[in-house]
Image 1 (tube, rainbow, N blue to C red):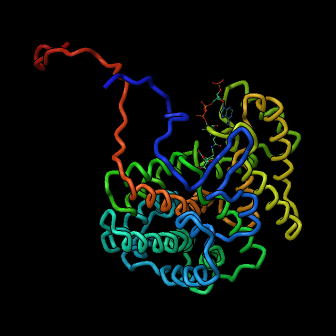
Image 2: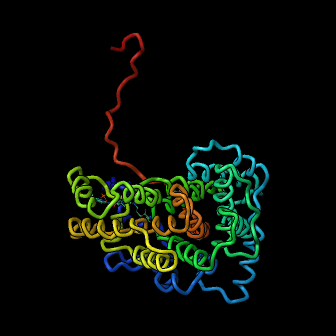
Image 3: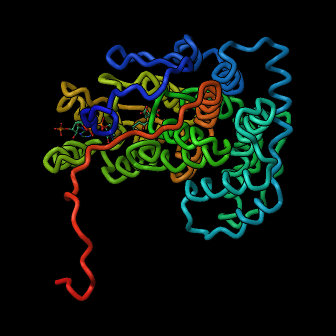
Length: 379
Ligand code: SDX
């Protein structure tokens, strides 16, 4: 086979055909199954969006009702997994715990033979429902609190906040988190979706594949950026300090968390939507000075790097929203994973229809063939 040209990071190289979501990076457009993200963020719910991503169509009222009921029935965690979450080191990062917990969940669940549609759907329901319970239960344990039993009648967002805090959430908090889950549910062939598809392409089971996605998402260049954005804003501390901080980043050619994207060369449409959610929360709960720091940082970075296509991405405002909801900073990326489980599973289902093992090539730059050197004759 003719040697192909190297494409670092496979930038722009199509790895599969997909009908799930579509991005126009220059126009700042994101669609899930043809529906604009701006409309879904306002009109839809996470459960409806998860159905849309998997099935390709918006559910009827009856379909949505029975789907929500099924999700509610799959939230309890198996006791070996609860014990594992309890025994985890208190300083373990929640994304490391989540990756281990998804593998453990798979170990406790019936095997999912590749191509078995019914077993796959069972895993889909289980993962959509259990991942939020895992994140919330671990948070309770690491705080030294008892886990909260799930409420099958609440939405994914509502039940997550109940299991996390022990209190039924306000309508506004539930709605804001639900909207954030819609916004984070899918995003074409991003690194974690690609990772999950690579694992599933070997006909591994969905739990192992989602583990791969969680691992990829945890990195600061991907989903892990959201917690680092808040740390940057907090370390800047004031609007007056933004310029000096940014100039230092520019001088050291540092990557400023929450900015830039492989596909978007304009502000991520989800960043716009999350910014509106933040403002809605401030109207309800009062504003937060860190938002002014964020606005100033956006202006300084875009003034300097906007022409290079560096604009706020989905991670820039999400942390401000989650922080306002009282969610700990190192739980921001697990919330991203809760949402992206919907997209990951839709992509695995697509992969299952026409699977091809991912096995890319390489450009060999190592030494030419040479004879073995016995240890006594080495330098
Ligand atoms: C997500 O892919 C997805 O769809 C991901 C995601 C999803 O929903 O799944 O949208 C979610 O991961 C959003 C991205 C979160 N990551 C961050 O906020 C981390 C900071 N961003 C950068 O690391 C970077 O922008 C990436 C990783 C997101 C994209 O980088 P690329 O496409 O690999 O581009 P690059 O690193 O090669 O940078 C190209 C140029 C470089 O300058 P030059 O060397 O050409 O002079 O742009 C510069 C970079 O230095 N640049 C930045 C920058 N991002 C790119 N400079 C300063 N700050 C940044 N954030």
